[in-house]
Image (cartoon, rainbow, N blue to C red):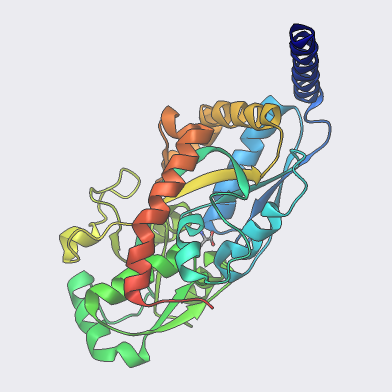
Length: 330
Ligand code: ASP
């Protein structure tokens, strides 16, 4: 009798597994059946938006469907992340975000999502250096003069960023910490409007990514004090690193991950990941990223596990740094 029950159990289990596999391969065959939304947490024209739109165009080809970029602004990128965490897990809503996914848990004590449990992970995209910029007529020719100027005039300095959780905020916070200077920070909905304010002389300093700043540095419309990488970068070979300029070991690299809502079918995540990896090899995408100072991540980081494990390590890395700075958004 018991043998009989075990046999029925085995047949039922095999049948249900067959149904699940059948369903997921059916999803994979029909997906995507309509355009896909890629949510960008910052204003159009900024560095994240530039990466997103270039990636979306390159992914639309292998997917055979349009990947539409939508900018959802606010709270240093956390509103967009929360929106995607709560979106339908149907494969038609994805998020592209940067280090902000790893700094938000320390910055926001009432965070509306958990980066480690509310998402499926697609993969990483590019690593982007940052540049410390001043308005054109700031009275400092190099980093040494800038540090002296900021220390003396901290109460008059306006440092722009894209809100708490943005990498421009993180870079600016580390800069102030290194100098022991407390300046006024001015948040914007992204570093596109922040850069406009710098170009217009409404703010004095901005730390932003080369994906947006390279063209302005080459055009001479802003003052460059250094790049936030250990070594000089190909896109700006004459630009000193902040480390060589006097801020020893100052390093901020902006990494980018693509996420889906938790529960998105694995077959869909795998198909979107395959399109991501194809896009990263697309010469149009790759050449534009290289021109803008961005580095395409190695294959191992382009996988779901390559993003999940990196995110976990970054949360562990930045948590103590942010808590020691005593910075909270809420
Ligand atoms: N990456 C943001 C943007 O694209 C800026 C930031 O995080 O500082 O505007």
